[in-house]
Amino acid sequence: MTLVESRLRTSLTAVGVPILAGGLALAGLGAWTASGRAGSPPHVGVTRAYVYQSFGSTPETAAFFTLTNDGGSADRLVRVTSPDTTEPPALSEHRMTSSNGAYRQSVDSILVPARDGLVMKPHGNDVTVRPKTPWRPGEVVSFTLHFAHGKPLRVDAAVVRPGTEQNRPFRP
Image 1 (tube, rainbow, N blue to C red):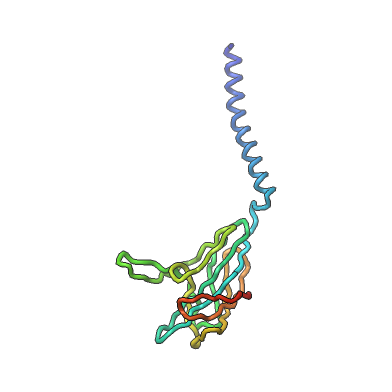
Image 2: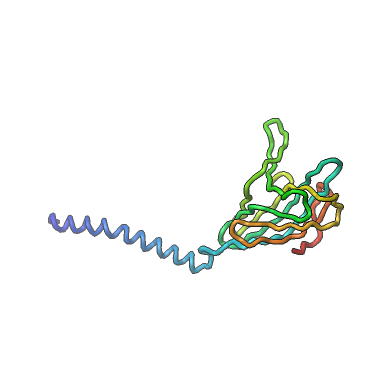
């Protein structure tokens, strides 16, 4: 092989490998786009909502939502509002100390993963609320869930005794 042939082969290899890699990447992106999920926005819904009845002198209680997201992008729950509370509801997460003590920590937002969802539970994420008046089991409390990317969702949550969940069908 001559020096000219060797340089030509090296030049073709140096150019050909990036072109091949780019073509494969483009084909993969094309397939992802054709599947209908590339860049599709979040689509968050609520399948269950309930709020615990507060007891005694405790002014706060918690609301829980089961959120679904069948969209192609994640979203974040960033705020919750309610006309039935004395203060704006607060997003929170329950944490444990090294001595097994529990405490509530405020969070700025809660992730709702794409093609999945989020189930709020007493030992995880919830919404801390202060009722204007005492709530009784069976009453309905109105909330509006606000997301970073999606439209706000208005939701009615059933009041239940602590330790129970809403077992009847949910109606948004």
